[in-house]
Amino acid sequence: MNEREKQLATEDMKTLLFKYSIPGIIGMLVNALYNIVDRIYVGKIPEVGAIALTGVGLTFPLSSIVMAFTLLVGVGTSARISILIGQNRHREAEKLLGTSLLLAMFFGASIALLSLFFLDPILYAFGASESTFPYAKGYASIILGFCIFNTCSFSLNHGIRGSGNPRRSATTQMIGAAINIILDPIFIFVFKMGVQGAAIATIIAQVASAIWVLSYFLGGKSNIKLRLENIRFNVEYTKKIFSIGMSPFFMQLFASAVSTVANNTLRIYGGDIAIGAMTVITSVNTLGFMPVIGMNQGLQPIIGYNYGARNYTRVKKAFTLGVTAATVITTVFFFVVQIFPNFIISLFNNDPKLMDIGTQGLRIYMLLSPLVAFQILSTNFYQSIGRATISLFLTLLRQVILLIPLYFILPRFWGLNGVWVATPIADTIAIVVTFMLILRTIRSLMNNEEKENMLETSSSEFKEGYANE
Image (cartoon, rainbow, N blue to C red; front, side, top):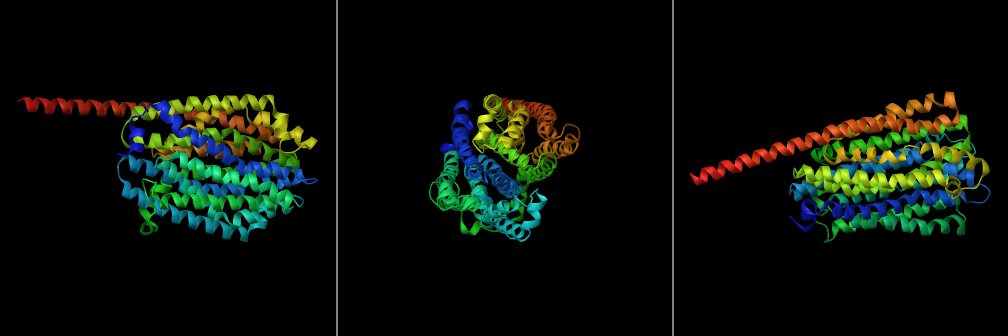
């Protein structure tokens, strides 16, 4: 057991959660600026900022599809590596890592080829109009053409976290975001490249992140290595990766479907400017919940390792502490949004109509945000302990079973406000169901630990009695 594994098994939980989560929170906040900074700068382009912002926002379903495949590989890899290291099976963890790199490369190349070939009809299906299409295509064609670097860097960065080095993982995200933030205004305004400049800045940042991640697993600091002989397709490891990664994969994939339905509904009830408002709202939502995602990343190796080591008391303690901290964060976020919505919208664009629609939408959309942290961490909890089916169900419940039908039904009665209110209604139902499931699971784990402790005690007493005889 090396030093990192010893920390996961024995260190004070508050200290451990702080140590593992803070790098993830910082990294995810900075990483959120990848897309948000693009949108802020694009929204400030003279004369066309509002419509260009809408065009970039229309590419979100495509970005969600790319992210879905990175999470399919990355989250599955991270969770399995944590469990394998907890079981002291480092050689298998290395083989699984090699398979994950090959999968990330394959998905990145496949997405680039297929999406670029069908890009025009895809963008129109996502809600593009004649005025927004040129901006959406100019941005998406560049991002998609180089997405293999994105799939590789994000997927393997999850592996860094799963192997017990959250600080290095956060550094990867910070490097990419910092490069993007610096290059965005240069390409957009100095070189006058508009939305294409924002896309170029993003892909340069993604290339740098990919190089940084590979250098870690090829160097001497990682407790597992990326070896050439392990970079091969392995059916067994692929199944293990997919079994856990399938839940976040569908979460992102259905986020794309939800975004597509929302965009088309918004165009009917509010026009292109309403889609622009949703672009701002989803950007703010992303930024607000990045600390929760960062905490998820910190919790995953802690829960995964201790679950693999059958230390269920620490599993429960980590989850409970994480939910408490995340709920505090989202509650603060809720009050900021409700008090300063005009200021938040103005950071992206000052168009009066966009400000009016966006302010109203932002307040309604975020109504349940203090409690959503629990639902997010619960879904991650099931991923971390290898129960992908339950995690997938919780994902489908909110985004498919509830949210998509609500987008079709509610606007018929409440117009544009029906789009905004669909999210808190879906959140309420999903949170109630999640609470019932997680309560039963925690109780089951604690009962199992109690039984195992009783068996160990009985076995020890038997051996001691036998020795005395």
